[in-house]
Amino acid sequence: MVSSISLSIDSDLDKVSLLARAVRALCEDMLSPDDQDAVELSLVEAINNVIKHGYHGERGKDVQVAVGLQADQVVIEVIDHAPPMPAQVLDNASEDRFNFDETDLADIPEGGMGLALIRMNMDEVEYRSNESENRLRMVKRIAPPVGKSLT
Amino acid sequence: MLSTDLRENVLVVRVEEKRIDASKAPAFKDEMTRCIEAGQNQIVLDLSQVDFIDSSGLGALVTCLKRLGPKGSLAVAGATGAVSRLFTLTRMDRVFALHPNVDAAVEQLSA
Image (tube, rainbow over all chains, first blue to last red; front, side, top):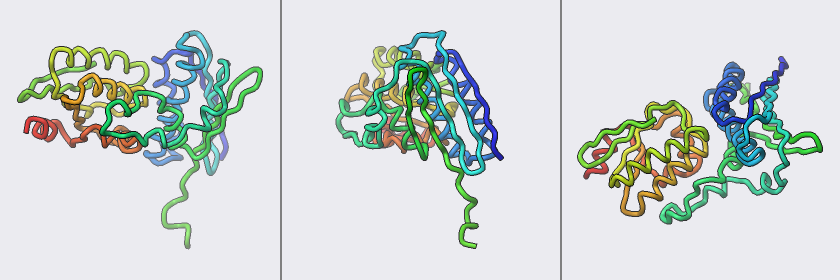
């Protein structure tokens, strides 16, 4: 089974949840509830980044999401036409973001967590830019049924 | 988006939205800031109606905690599913005391 669908929204933060819920529903039969949560959060973070940092909050810009449902994985691509994000921003994002000192109020992060969360929630994350578009590709692998791998 | 209830000097703030995301985080911060500036520094945040929080929402909670300062407390009640997992994944469960329900959180804060 391979199928794909493209969805798009205007660059408006109020519209992100609608798209996220639609994509979650598409994955419902393929992913566990925890993995649906992971995909929904990653997608929301990716689109928020495009709207806030790519388009600087400006409405009326296009955000496209391509969802590919494959036998062994769900592939989600977020496509935008904003100035590209510097490559090292994604490279440097990791769970280290959450190695803060919880006893020091000033050290607890209020932002800059989105890309780290995407990397922690998805199995593959890749960012590509060319002259016409930026494309963040996120893959969630489908876990094999428990207990059947050894038989 | 918030409703409040004062119980034993603890302000219980209930979030009446299903999602605290980037579109809702600014309003959430504003409403919480009003509670804090009104003098409340023992706050229980009831998230039992919330089924999704993104990093903007989580960041807004941290902002509120910082506004409360070291003498204040912000405890979380009723976080389940994806919301509860986000706290664990980001290690914010070390920052916010998570309680199964409002009663348990109020008891802890008023003790």
